Image (cartoon, rainbow, N blue to C red; front, side, top):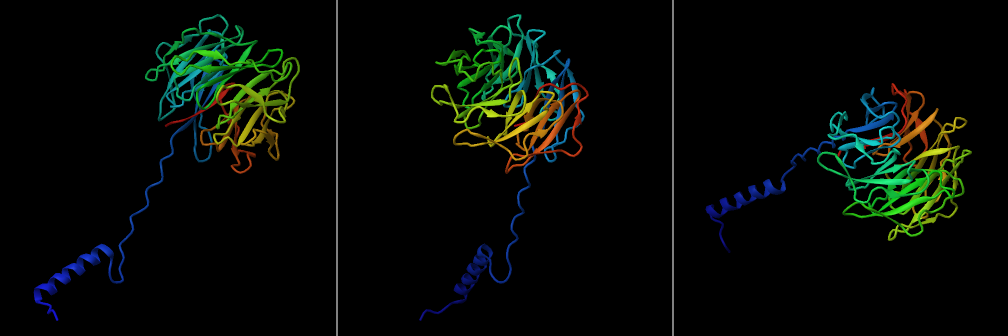
Length: 385
């Protein structure tokens, strides 16, 4: 039998001490590290076009409430408003000046500063309408309402300056109103408000130059004198939704298309078009692609229609309680978190709603509507990256 010497006994004790330190011995236990602090919410801002100015609001990311706006000189009537995906720059169409106004966005306060070289000429005497930017923030597209064309620009990612794409403007149809780019950045869609067949023009986007090429079959019809206006592409890139506001008489429909993800061609969703309120001029989707909202601007209506979206088929189903009262409705926008919906109201307010995440129902904020100090027309929201 091997004897334990004093030296070997001491070594065993040392090993036991080390083991207890590493593994924990006896009744004690080490204190677990504290949990990491919650992530700091990124600032969110809401911007509105108004008469002769652009309004900037800070969004409370917990409650959705808006602070008093700061004002910036802007075009007489800014029909289109859009921000780059990075949140660095904001652009507003200036029909009276036949130009696009560009602003840099302060990432902390949301205040706007004119981009050097702004306003940027569209190059015709027709004036820009709707605006759209591709998901990479490389290109900006502007409908030229009276000319029946679409202007295309490259965006300088450092300065926000716009440069016309070679070959711009590109042909559209009668009274191109609004524009939307699909999530892949491959396709551009334009609503032609006065097209006799209610046509939607479709283009492929050259990923290097930004040049547009009409897709075979374009423009794709909705219905005779449907008055296609608002456009929204589903976040999954499979569906396009087009509000049909009507031309001579108010319409009450939303057309839904499937998108061929290879060619960009459009085909009707089963059951399309779907009924909404009177003159649904603007539409917006929540970021998850679960819900669609339409602003019904006819003075006899003045509501927001809400729909759930079947992500497999694209079919729209009215949300229980829809349409929701919203005052004299103008443009509308969903915040980047998908929690809040904002609606521009005449003459000088913005109404805010909480979006029920399970069914898409709307509940107006306590304290809303918020004073805008001017007549807000169209809205967009921005989240800092």
